[in-house]
Picture 1 (tube, rainbow, N blue to C red):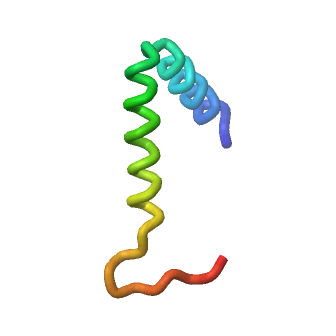
Picture 2: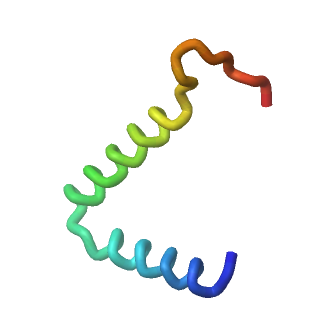
Length: 50
């Protein structure tokens, strides 16, 4: 990862930490749902072993 990517990541972490706890929980729930959706295979495709 280049320096600009690291800097952007740090900005995102700082912004997340500045949120109130209830908003942090909303962000975490959103990201968990997004990760689950990304992990699901498309209909009609098979999951390849890792």
